[in-house]
Length: 354
Image (tube, rainbow, N blue to C red; front, top):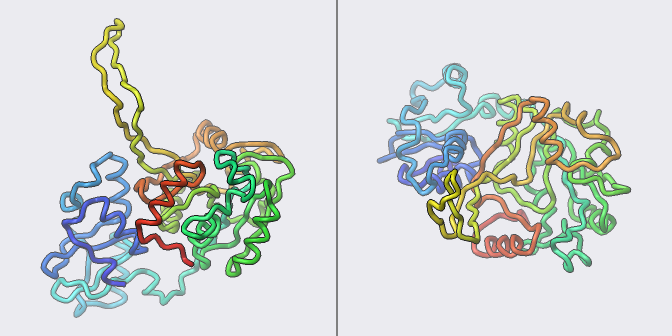
């Protein structure tokens, strides 16, 4: 485990992002010549993405060069607690002559007796998958295979059983096939099926659930995307900022397939950019929603998630984005994206938990 928390200071930002994700922790540490020289958190990396820093740049310019640590000969639980509390950090390296030999967290200190927050998960799986026709005329979109595993199983397996209260799956099109598959394949998580009598859009079906049983913050996922990041980091971000809604976004390069004309106010041509590439934050299809926001969703009526977002923003509620690297989410919602996802899985070591 320790080797996953120690990284090289010459890594690129993109490589560091992957290292943090693999570590499963919110902070990794940098050593040089077996000496601790820095720390780097998932929050540091998110800020770089938002600032549109080139992800191929080395992290050496951006990591914290004053990391907090404690030498083993001075270590005590009391001292470790004081450092964690004083600097509001989640983990603390223990060193011998500044070489990291262990990293402890609050969970280690209390010997896993911290109360575990459990979350309601909501997977939207009622659509017809029309952009994948004629494939989905036979097989419903949630059962589209990726590396031999249906996408909905990849999504469900990405959630930690320890933190999952229950998983709600909204169904409509070919509902009996999806339900039969999940009943036979998913044994370690509680699944509650919500059957739409009529299509309720991409968020309307959440009102079919008994709101009293839902957690205060609800994780929402579309059924045609797979998210590689640690969902716990997103939840921590959502709660630490006291958000009403957190939207997971990815910075995507989008190429305009035409020459773009730049025009002056008088209508004169200034220049033409041939097929320029722009960077935009795109909505991945993962959200964390405060349960109080459910009041903006009409019961029994069709509503899409974009409409809900606009409504929440219009009431000046707290909405923040959680940026991730574009290479860490996969989309099977249309043919071109599905083919790209299959290629990515074929050429990488992505875990499918199978």
